[in-house]
Each structure stands twice: as structure tokens, then as C-alpha cells.
Image (tube, rainbow, N blue to C red):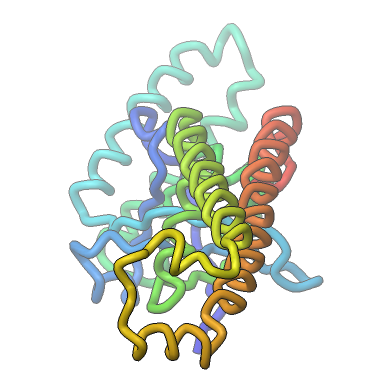
Length: 258
């Protein structure tokens, strides 16, 4: 049973802003260490789970936490050096102080769970400012990929990847698959009634001929062609929809991803 959990959220490392994964440190993911599962992460609100992302999930080991602490301490020192010229930086320093305190406590225990997420995925979930969250915590529902939805999770993770190159390659693959279905469907639907005699003249055995006639193979192939054509149109439309949603996402930081 999937349970909603309150996660303490932290920004991702600077050199991971364009990566298609998030780091999580919790007991459930600790059992999956080394597997790099794809997760469906939903933000839970009073109105229910509305926003969701698909992404690769990595287990945050202590080495990752140490690196995060080092980066946050460096940034805090830099801000303190400029505090005299810009008093408004005090709020950012307090935010870093809270994050460092949480990380140091977290090195000892797995509770509460922590999640390290880039701005791209936070905006997809509608979490634009971590400092506005009470105690830096947000209620999330995390589902890890499992059969038979594993392929669907992987496809959606590629469509929500922050790098445009990954997204475009995935959409082109979808459109190419759709065109393949459409072409196959048109070909099967256009088969002549006596196609087995025209295309396969070597079929002279009465058993094969009776088999084609008894089960009306040609008619079945016609309907299969129609079904493949419809599937191709639907898949092609989904590819175009993904392009449109990505364009909308680039215009609005709070828009949902496909």
C-alpha cells in the first residue's frame, strides 16, 4: 500500500541541475540500492494528489550528504561576505542555516526522509520556493516502477527530463513508432481478397487454402490493419501533445509537464 510521507526537501547540487534524477534517503529506497528505479512522485495537497513527476531515483548515501553540506557551507560563507552590502541576503542565510542543521541531524537517522530535487522538478510539482514550506517539508506520495508499468514510467521520465535533447529524442521515437503503426495498418487494410494467391503463389497446398478460407484470414488482417492505424494516430497525437505541453512548461514555471 502506498503511503503519503512528509519529506524534508533540499535543492540538488549545482552540477546536477540538468540531470534526470532526484536523490532520496529513506528506508524504502535503501532496500533498492543500486537498482536506480524510476519513481512516480506526487505532491499531496488538501485537494488530493494533483501534480506529479516521473524521474530516476537514487539513494542518497552519506557521501552525497557530505558534499551537499560542503556546498551549502561554501554558499553561506559567500553570502555572509556580501551581507553588509545587501541586508536582504539574511533570509537566504537563514535558509542555508536551516538546511545545514537538517542535514547534520539527518546523517544519524533515516527519519524524517529527505529528498534532493532540482528546480526543474520542484517547479513541476508546484514547489517554487523551499523557504516558504513549513520546516522545509512537503507531503509526497512516491511510487516506484513495477511490472507491467515499468516501460510507461521510463517513457514518462524521458518526457519530463530537464534536458531538451533527451525530450526531443523521446518524442521523435514516439512519432516514428506511430508512423510505423500507421504504415503497417494501411498496408494490411489494403490487402486484396486473394492476397495469398497473388503474393504467395507457392501456397498450393489445399490445407493452407482451406485454412485461409475457413478462418477468413484476410478479413482479420483488414481489421488488424484498422486497429494498428488507429493506434498509430493516437500515439502520433500523444507525441504532438508532449511537444505542446513542453512548450507551455517553458513559458510558465508552474505549468504541468506531460
